[in-house]
Amino acid sequence: MLSPLQSPDNLKRLLIIGGAVLGVLLVVGLGISLLLGLLQPAASHGGKGTPQAGVKVGASPLLFGTNLDLMDRKNQVFTSNSTYAVLRGMHPGIVRVPIRVDASDAAIQKAMQTVKDLGAQPLVDVQGIFGSRLTDQVAHVVAIVRQVFGAGIVFYEIGNEEDLSATPVEQYVATWNSLVPMLKQKAPQARFVGPVTYRYDAHYLEGFLREASPLPDAISWHEYACDASAAKDQCIQRLGVWSQHISDARQVTQKAMGKELPVMITEWNYAPDASASDGKISDSEFMSAWTYQALQTLVSNHVYAAMQYEAVGSATPLVDSRGTITTQGATMQSLYQSLVVEPSPMATAGVDDGATATAIASTSATATATAGATRVPTKVAPTATPGTTPIKPTPTIDPNQSLYTQITRTTPFYASSLAAQDSGKWFLYTYSQGSKCAFEQGGYGVYVPNDASSLICRADGVPMYSSFAMQVDMVITSGTGTDGGGPSFFDQTVSDNARIQVRVNGSYVLYDGSTAIMSGTSSALRVGLNRTNTVTLIIRGGYTYLYFNGQFVKKVAHAYSGAGKGGYAVYARHNESSTNVVFKNVKLWHA
Image (cartoon, rainbow, N blue to C red; front, side, top):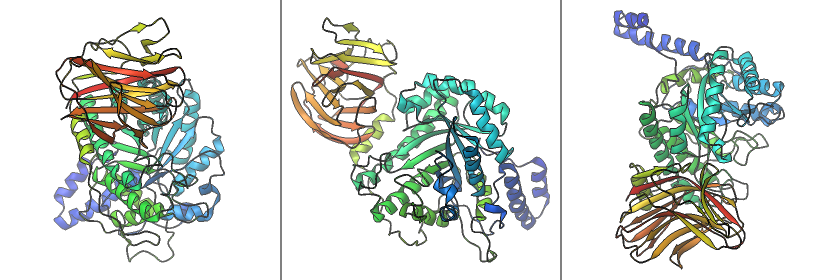
């Protein structure tokens, strides 16, 4: 487990021998002492102040973390005293610092010292290491971190969103297995975290856990609720998917390892492409309501640690360029005060307000000593903070979204990475004009050149059912505009097929034979070439339900006969230029 806290036997004997009142005092006194010694939290900025008395733990301070970008030493947190003071007053329990191995020594040391001065737990994200052997540079980064934190606990996250750049899980694991054992020797107290995917990916996580040696101390991925163009209500509603991801990750971990691991959400916010013009950041009511609901989701799901993206410099900062706390920052601060800290009237006047972070960091192991140990108050009424607005009730979950969750949580009757031929008996052929169905680029590729229109590549080895769900990851690697493809199924009783065409420009069309029965655009789609989209079709009760990246889009009546004579396929169509679509991680469920 991540927390090193275990009660020594001699302490247990003392507690048993002592009286009830004395026992309580020993638990409190010695427990805090042990935690301070084991986690070695940092001192307050400039060494001023003492830990504040009266700390209470309702939720772990590690849930109130943030990201600190390290492009150079000119980061606003490093150079602005007012920005630093505001951030310190928010008491970030953990700070993630993404560090490329080519970062300067001075920048790394400055960042680590700042995290220490904030009283936060450090999470060092080592980036830029895949596809090359950079063990010496990574070891050098670890040496600099140890200069600041000594033998204290430091989390190291290996890589960053490697799945987004199409790094296969096998390559990720190989790098992990060669790098982490060496780092463990150089930093025995370090804790290692992966696989750091850009979204929750059960297949990637399972592949990582089955082959990782050593196993991680925690698992991590990033969560964003919607795209910047999505409606505000949709961004709030999509938070329900976070709970599904966390639950599924625990099931995957239990299945792969026989136990659970702590969950870290090392980046989170409402949209990865948030911008000042998206109509959300400027809406303080939305930002307050969404942030409140997001944090409550993390708390109620017993997440070990979470890091907002990001402290300064991004479109969604906690502190703006003027050094003023933002609506999101104020909402986080208010929840922190309600859930974690209750200021004591015994606090000494003039004490540095960042000094409480030392005591808070020391309590984090108690709140999250094991996965799922976070305690949640029954009803939270956040302390009023200027700039925040009353919180709206939690939206109800769309029943169409619940259908997706219900089905995809069951065991598929067929699943394949599509990295090679298997029991699915996928069709392999190259036609005279150049169209082909072939295993390539770590998946199953469907290619249609300029002088062809479309190609359906089927699986002949999988039985057809009257109700089913089909899900596959797809990446359009070549094409423009309305070129694209997606999953397909066919019904031999009526010599017909249905297929979804997800296009380069972000539009989509669902065809029944030659008839378009559903079309439009969706903010849930990742637009452009070389972007992974997970497409799901559920055929049930006379309807076809469509989902992109786990998000419900539309449903439409569909006259699929369900006679059990047909099959499953994937499809590509050329409308404007040569088109290639690579498919991976197909799953089929009974619906």
